[in-house]
Length: 94
Image (cartoon, rainbow, N blue to C red):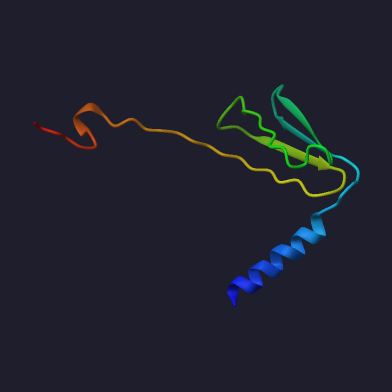
C-alpha cells in the first residue's frame, strides 16, 4: 500500500509542476563577495543539468528564483581524507 500512495503522490506532484510551455524561470546565485551566476530555465532546457562550482567553500550563498514552474536546486560537497602512512587501511605481506 505504501508504494501505491507514493506513486499517487509522485503523479500528483508531476501534474502540478509540469507545463508544456510557459514563461522562463530565472535563477540567480550569489555570494557576499563578487561571485554571481545566473541561470535561465525554460521549456527548451528544463531537463538539462546546469552546474557551477562554488568559488569559496565553506561560504554563504543566496539563491533567488523568479518566474513560473519548478526548479530543483542541489548542493554537493565531496572530499577525501587520505590515511596516514602508518595507519594504512590494510596490509599485505607476501
